[in-house]
Length: 185
Image 1 (tube, helix red, strand yellow):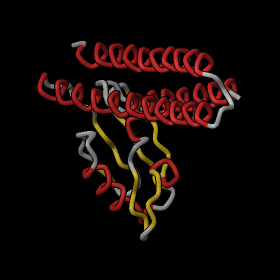
Image 2 (cartoon, rainbow, N blue to C red):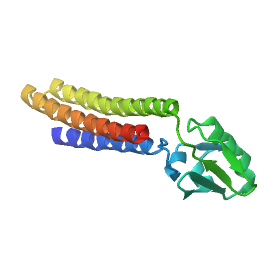
Image 3 (cartoon, one colour):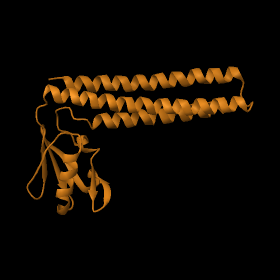
Image 4 (cartoon, rainbow, N blue to C red):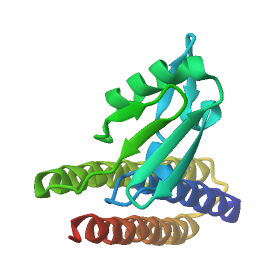
């Protein structure tokens, strides 16, 4: 029973770390990558639709992203969503394709992006800690019902804390790497 709880905690924590990794990938580093637009959601005729379902996103050059909508009438909606997002890019369109030029980042913009990264990392840490809190509550419940002893509960809590620390360390190392990538001139 304890092993099942810890296995569930491991699975949920790894999903939280994976989600944080995906969020980090969508933060701009000065190079064009289609992942920059992963978090963009377009209000497409009243339905919130991810950009990658409405258009093909490609990095055609080192500093240029092209967004080719499947439906040309969606171009104004896509442009509005890009402008409203926190990625800091201005779209240009020729009626068929939206082009996003990736400018050189200023030091101020780099610092702003580092703040965004720290926010994403903290959300990931909170998600991991929430998993720990839930499993701790389950362990205490099992002890209260008499299904496990105090020693088993204590050992399980220690293993759970090790899992938590490992997941948080992984998030912190991803943060450090991404931060260095952004601050690199």
